[in-house]
Image (cartoon, rainbow, N blue to C red; front, side):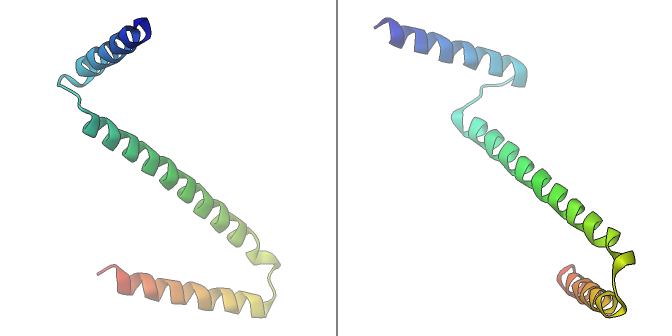
Length: 89
């Protein structure tokens, strides 16, 4: 009985704090939306970090490439730019 009362008190205090922060009544839908947005932001930051790391490694290896590897790299880069140009409009 005491544990149930303490849980209600904790949820009530959480509700009061969040309603003071957001200046409105907070329901579970908006809290779940905030958690989803935070999760997507973390995933986006990890993808951005991975892409930037990969690009750094790719461009730092350009001076050590042979002529054939460099031409293949340029061919792949040109193909990616064409695909991006088709998708964007």
